[in-house]
Amino acid sequence: MQHFEKLYIANIEEVSKKVENSFLFCGKNWDFYFTKRDNKTDFEELENVKYIEFVDKKDFESFILSNQIIDYSIELDKSMVLYHG
Image (cartoon, rainbow, N blue to C red; front, side):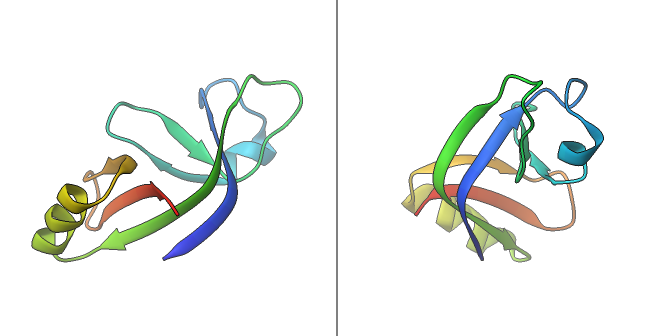
């Protein structure tokens, strides 16, 4: 699990290379999350966010049902979740 004081949501096609290199993951609705921002792009800012990965699908599903999540992704080998924490 990782904790972020701030995360940023932006269009991947509009961000600088520096921001692109801080890509964390893409959520279920194609929101792109970054750990850095620049002054040229419009960002939505999230505060006090935790990121967790799951290998076990049942653990992931249980976590989703019992927590208030921000977003998740099941596109890769590991399922990923963002939630306030």
